[in-house]
Amino acid sequence: MVDIKFIRENQDELKEAIKNKGIALDLDELLAVDAKRVELQLAVEQLRESRNKLNDNITKAKGDVERQSIIRKGKEVKEKLADLEPKFSGVSLRFDELMARVPTIPSSDTPVGRSDADNVEVYRWGEPKKFNFEPKDHIALGKSLDILDFDKGAKVGGFRGYYVKNDGVLLAMGIMMYAIKKMVSKGYRPMIPPTLVKSFALFGSGYFKGLEYDAGIDEIYEVATSDKEVTGEVSKDKKFLVGTAEPSLLAYYSGDILKEEDLPLKVCGYSQCYRSEIGSYGKETKGLYRVHEFMKVEQVVLTTADVDRANKLQDEMTAISGEMHEELGLPYRRIQICTGDMSAGKYRAFDLEAWLPGMKKWGETGSASNFLDWQARRLNIRYTDKNGEKKYVYLLNNTALPSPRIFIAILENYQTKDGHVKVPKVLREYVGKKEIGD
Image (cartoon, rainbow, N blue to C red; front, top):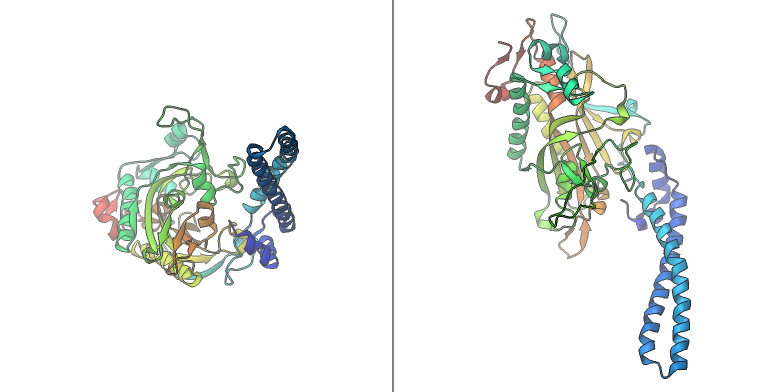
């Protein structure tokens, strides 16, 4: 969410951001609705104040004539309120709907572009490995090594379902444990957060495009089964499965007022992740590259309202992921995301992409985003600065490591001519061997 005062004072810059991010929003409409909202709010507040004064005056009335006069005036005020309050509610709802779409103005170094085709490579480590044989993709390797089963996965879990088996389990869990240990060594507090959450966590972190969940565009699974409160009553809260630990980690601090001396707060979360992938129909329909559920370690940072500090922290977070790619021996590149490929709330964003020789492509293995205070305003996460002033924190997130695509990258980059897969040194303590298939 963006502060309405900031919107009023920076209309030209916001219109440019709306255009460059390709967001369906008429800022002039929002400002007109805001003006009407303020007008109606003032009128409603004045009428409510008059009603309260009239109620007080009834008890002080001297005689029936004065009392009846006050009652008549009270009825007039009541009728006016009955007319204005629904109008105010309707205008306020429209205001909230439009406000939910207002983007963060992207950083000055963010490339302007329409789609992911306009993203810019800013760093590369290693080069795509050259084989003296035709490399297999992870699907063929997983089947021959008996560590992946997509047929039974589709039978039991449906489209994009899969089983990880045997040494594949040790490799997949090893990736997660390696990532957790790395994050802890970097000063991040580990958490296993809820994967079943209320809607405010997803709206607050920006995973709903609007005020409410929209099954047609939001790549989130809603849980149909109703829940019960501790009292035994049916819960009115809708529940959803998270697509990453980020919403749960951020919502942990919702409503909190932190101390400046405690910032930055660094946490990481391991979770199962669920994504409906409705926006990727027909893309990567085979294998592990695009699936409905997977494991991931996510890193989140809460910091002070300082843009330079937030950018520095974002770069540090991205560097940790890069370090893990390097320790795993995976060629990768860092991509700066352009405006047209950037969601509304992001100020600055990068992706990491590892080389997948079997699939013959670079594949996204992480995403680092700086939201400034856009998420914090939605989740009401603030801190008290040294002068006693309350400010919204700046929020950042980054993928430490995701299980499926790093799993793919290891299988395809470490395959041997005889169809085995060497295990990267940093993962051997978890897998218990140097080579899968040996």
